[in-house]
Image (cartoon, rainbow, N blue to C red; front, side, top):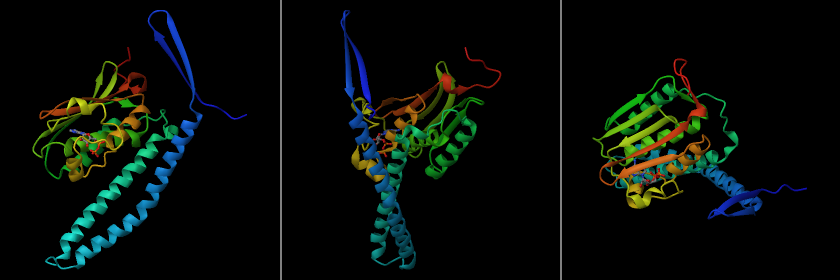
Length: 266
Ligand code: ADP
């Protein structure tokens, strides 16, 4: 017979009453799966035409003389098609990451290597601006999926770049803490008002739509981070103050951390 999926909740009322609620979520899960597949297919199909458009736009920009009045229009079209392509890529990345099936927690991720890749990419994004401070405690490596952890980390770093001034400081750390190992990004940027913080990981949620549009955000970055972290038994913490800056961090729990031989788990 057909398998059903039930969600079971046990709720306590006062000291004496317990309520057991079972809900059949078979259909909801089925629809979620269909939605994911649809989004993945659409994003995939959109990538090719966008690449072709972008190629021709770039070619036209190069062949039309600098002072031609069409140059400005071409520049805008090029910018917008790049933006659309990066949104499509983020959508694809999100639908891949939402699918828990390909997360293997047996693999060990080399964190020193990952931090140096992050630093390289951060420098490329920053184009010589910003003062980065990268630090990585050696030999502390999480179990998990390298691609997903990298995309969580780079999304946090690129947000710090996007939402702070070009001459400000951005600190990126990987360090042992009591319950596991912590990755954190601290910026002295715009900061976020408390009422927005709880909603930041929702798809397409943005504090300031106009600013995000200008800075090229898709509104999907933190949703990607959230899903990637949930596969690693972790979640995003955000502390922030408007006008002062923000700290985005997550802790990979100790049971997924490999320590150097000199340190023992307690
Ligand atoms: P986006 O692509 O718009 O950056 P995200 O999902 O990555 O989308 O982030 C959602 C929103 O959270 C952003 O639009 C921005 O308003 C806010 N945000 C994210 N990171 C920071 C940060 N380091 N400082 C201030 N605001 C931030």
